[in-house]
Length: 295
Image 1 (cartoon, rainbow, N blue to C red):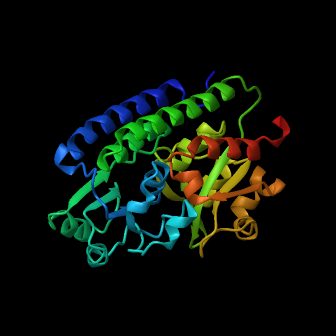
Image 2: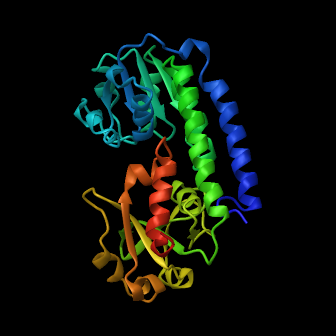
Image 3: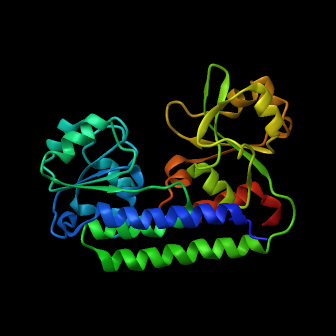
């Protein structure tokens, strides 16, 4: 049995991939391909990472606050958080190409940028690992580096297949993982299905403890206890990151198997959730943290 995609999830993934391919044909007409663009504003950490992975980081003149990899990207002028960018800040960089992950905002800022007459490309980012190669190809098409993107996409495809094949051969029960994005008013904001956290948990051979919900939602104490996670997984870094003490101070979490064993894992947010070129490596690292006894 594959640890990556059960049959129902496989259908969802194939559907999402087909939708991505269709959307790319709409979002990337030839007029938006900017092979000679010398001033690119990258909005979204994964978009920035892909541009650098294609060897075109020198063309990037500004990034958003989620663009933390590679480290040299953090030295570029910053135009704000991906969902709260300043249109004026972007335009002040005098770009000839703007590339943004889907979900970038706010809507008013995006509309201003699209109406500016500058080349603006949106890169769809569905929350499944099978769409990563298409995302790479989309960025490569937008910046006129299709050959390099194809090479990278094929390498990533091979890496993703390798970890899937490895986990197909794994035996034993899966760990139930609760990804906690934050705490608000004493409630855990958790990742359900149709989230990048869910995709990575499954790729790493785990089971999402709250796959019955969709997206990111706050859980009641009863829902936390019923989920019975073996492990709590959170993002590291940032001013609002969760600690084990904070998480297990909640009586509901303390009452779970994870709370009783103090099983608490942290990983870099972009590395874990970016669904970019490093996804297979991140899944391999998460697998090692979940199943240290198998090493």
